[in-house]
Length: 495
Ligand code: NAD
Image (cartoon, rainbow, N blue to C red; front, side, top):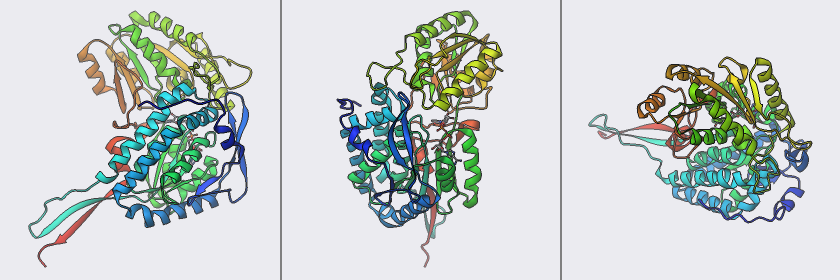
């Protein structure tokens, strides 16, 4: 999809960010009940860019009540085609405001504008358009049971949904949750990550402009421990859809047990990108570099373990290193920048700690792994060679621009290591042997397998993993099942 993008830096966002950003509850912008606010920083400059309302459990109560009212009122009873039309109008408004949204997301999350233009915004718009199309096509079926009865199923929206979103793709992952939930007739209380609340609030305004009735989408900004937990524990929330870390995901499953909320979880990853010696090494190395360094490595499906067959190991390390060194680190608002900062000082320290851990474990740091600017959370992309399967840098999610290159002998060795972590989100395999890649597609424990490519996602295909990578699937028809429940209806024909 091509999006018109023609911004002059600061032209539109300046006015949006000068006023304190408020919660969105019941179709109105309101301050938090406590009156408290927090500051959002630009990770590229460490400077404050916005003041954001800090919600708490009381704000969550108001938001859930507004969502319940809108669910029982206009939204679930509205003609499904009309719901779809509103969502399509919203998608058009996202296109019309592309320059402003891209800039806000870049300032708040430190993402290069080129990446938001290519990935985040088009994916968000695609998702919205795809599910808008589904709104009037969700139906049950007539099932033959007995001669004297008409028996059929209908699919009903689950009710009020809590959508809890991480900071690495605030706009795109936010929309992965909002679009199917709203298309199915659910209403939503959304909690963006506290580090990246701005784009959610802006697109929430555009949703109202598109005609979304008050209370259908509510946004409560603030910390996970207060706003997030209040949502998860709320007795009037019917479903939690969460993307984030496995630790928080575990707590969400426990919290949701109170009223047996439905839960879907998209969690972490430590994905293997496997390169056999009969692969196209140039293409594989290029994809391996973008597979780990895209979004500064802050990607759940990042190919953070590159498994390479012995004969081509040195060559792949060399090519990856060249590509890492060639990445252009810099101002995310500059279209030529390919690598932005990581999200926060805390994240930066955690990544640099992992670089130390890797060194201490005996891996060889071939390039990068250092703070790359005095100001802003920039890290030079790191390539570790000589990594073994049991090292912590090979097992734990680093969530930064650090790749571990691991040597393997044969298929059995590669498969054992690829499947040998707590995660199962995605994997890639590179080989010109058709039988081999098919064997791997079958045997890799991963929700997505890429063959001779890496990193694509599409709203039409299911997305998710099991174990520490989560529970359930997003996207496609799987998401429709997440936000609806089937009901069986029996009608006696004999009276
Ligand atoms: P996080 O778990 O710290 O936070 C995610 C969201 O949960 C934030 O909005 C946060 O405020 C909220 N939260 C924090 N504590 C909470 C609590 N006790 N109760 C309820 N909500 C709470 O994750 P993060 O650091 O924002 O994101 C990084 C993680 O997300 C990584 O592990 C990454 O792999 C994962 N991720 C997964 C996918 C996927 O599709 N599988 C996509 C992106 C990110």
